Image 1: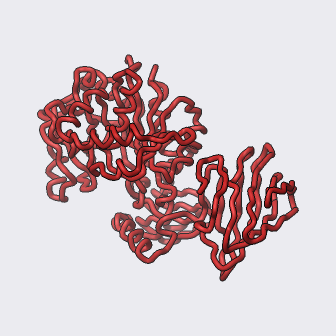
Image 2: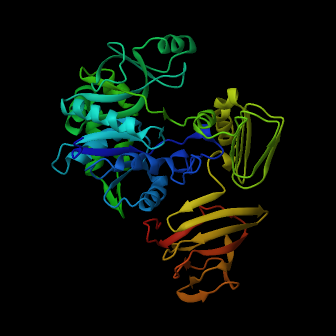
Image 3: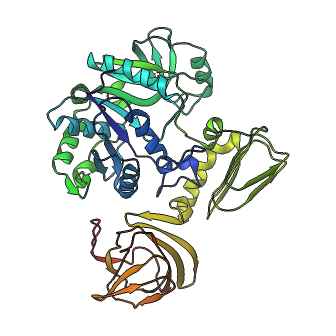
Length: 479
């Protein structure tokens, strides 16, 4: 397979609320390690499964601003050095994201085939997937807009469907003409579709020439091209990120690539994909692809079960015990526990919506929050005080900052800290502490070779994260 003209475009948007409480807006499923005995996240697996294809060019990642440092760190962990990371100030669905990627790809004077991938999919048979890429590449070189259609195994109402012009041969090396795209159907129609060998699930994976998808977008959705060109032209380079112009991109239509062009174009083609694909869209789909014990239970973490079968148990921190349980999803994190019947698990998104309406932080963010310098865990909180565990990576520094409403007391438990307070610097070793007065400018750094771990005790009238005035920041976050 000659793949020298393939540029992977990895779309990293989405909040993954159906996998709450593990997946939340602050740290959604694409950045999580969800597959047993595999430390790679879904994002890392997405790139890794195509990285061995000869001469695949540098990838383009499209993500939102909030997750920029998460994606940069995960890319670094798997050794991707040459890449483009484009930041969307707002989520605008797949059509604008793909338009931005295509414009970026041709800006270097080339016209590659774009392989568009969602960062949160799982594929069991990577050999079959690579064969499908080979078939799609041939059709893309012929000027087709190729989508990948998945062999349906059940009457799913959460997926769109693709109807082909003839019966599907999964052993064929040719793409098929598309007769129709169908949005998420009701149960009755879904049952009809899976009994008809002309129907496939719409995977949301695509391949096409950059110039061809721009040509079709200009034909059917010219306003998208117009706004994306302007937003990209007015971009700001921020460290290793390319930040789109916020005001311009806000005006761009919020529309999927299917609705924008795939349902209208005369050059759509589909490649059948029988490779164990799933979008990991719910806890039940994760149970489906996970290893099970003799009773059909998935046990991840500290689990002890008795007289139980066909359950999904996941413990992130504590011992979880199940007795006499069947067909349940039980997920424990450090600040929430989910217990649900498998056939009701889709309703978890309604719970997340309720938590947001009630202003509960558990609906949006984890107790442990990741930052470019490391992470912090809000361990316990009371009236006018809070305790955090802070971990700073070797060589990293927090911003030079101050607070209007709180004081801080830092106790080093591992590593060495360099602390700056009102322009005076101190070295603080293990089992030593230092006090940060109210209103003082201060900065915490790790000058050592191992992670710096400290306990922070905050006290004051207001303890939220928006009480930070940044004067200097190596990560571009100064006020």
